[in-house]
Amino acid sequence: MTVAVALLASQAAAQSTTQSTPEHRPDASAVIQEAQRMLESERTRTRTEQAEAWRLTERDWERYEALMEGPRGVWSPNLDPITALGVEARSAEERRRYAELLVAVERERTERELAFQRAYDEAWQRLYPDEMPVDEFTLRPRNAFHFTDEGALQARLTVYVAVEACERCDSTVSELLAQGAQMDIFVLDSDGDDAVIRDWARRAGVPADRVRARDITLNHGQPDPEHGITMGSLPQVYPR
Image 1 (cartoon, rainbow, N blue to C red):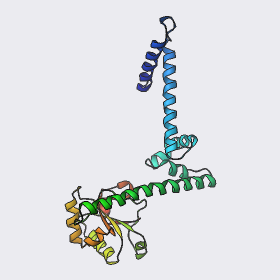
Image 2: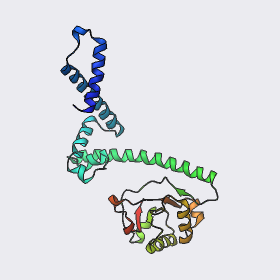
Image 3: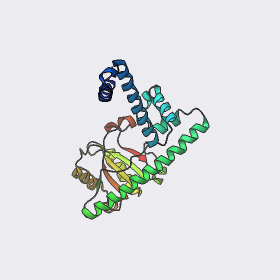
């Protein structure tokens, strides 16, 4: 008997004891069956809530759970439900449905995060108007690429660098600055110390006025091997 079933069984037994006369108390098997029914009801409620949070049907969620128990769960253990269902779609129509759903969900998420980012920026300007902002909150890009040509500069960029032992990091940032790129810079070895990032930014020639104007943001970062971001792979540049 699992811990959950045992706990629910004790609850069910307690309820039965208070509601039954000694002559009509249920036997142990009846108590266990009631506990299992309660557990399944709780699972169904949780599944329904999770599905609704992602705008999916219960059938969608059941398929998602089944997919993540198979190869897809091994290949992409952190994949969100809508993307998992879309990648494993069984028809073009199904694929289109999940694609449109993901666009709607991502749009709302981005709007909420941007609203908070704007509030964060305003708070920084009020509280520390003379300091170069270092962000804890910045939208993370989805898809990585190595900076190779000027075409990448058409979009805002996210740049991953290190303070120590990365000459190419400084030269890449200098090149991007010279070309007027807007970018979010993540420093992977700052250890959460704002002063480390500010000192590096001054040394790299990052203009303080562009940071205050939010053309450039300075952020604490960390390695993300799952997406190919390691200390040995820097610098890396991502399109927003």
